[in-house]
Length: 200
Image (cartoon, rainbow, N blue to C red; front, side, top):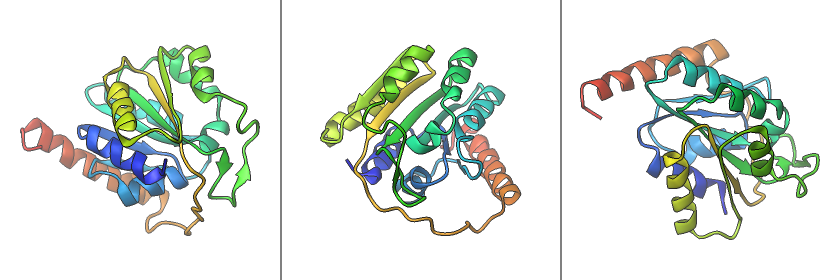
């Protein structure tokens, strides 16, 4: 299973969702293969994406959100699984790209890679819906899992075990953190306006 396949599956199914990505390869996969959704691409500090997505979802309960999360980013802040379960946002769903490595930093293995079950950790933390898609799943299996995630009662979490693929850090993006936030806000507002006027 390639990261690009996951990004394309989410783009096909989550056409009405706001997308938040973690820093690193999950964000790059979405940038290269994802949809036209308003998207905030996470940056430093590592591990902040889940709670950022939670804040966005709580601030806009009238919109649906998808967090595209790397397993390395999630590992940096596993306590966020408890935080999100406790807050129970009804409009936030999470897709975790799991390859057991810190891909951007050079491919170092995660602690307990191949041993820990992220979906089981989330379930134990109180998430009502969790699933895992294996690396050898078909495109149809992946599409069905993404559709089920988006239909599930949120918060919900789907782990997709993806292949190890080089994804070197390409340097800083074109915008500073503040500029990236402003660009996201502008695109979100324009998208919001289109939806409210039935032009989406």
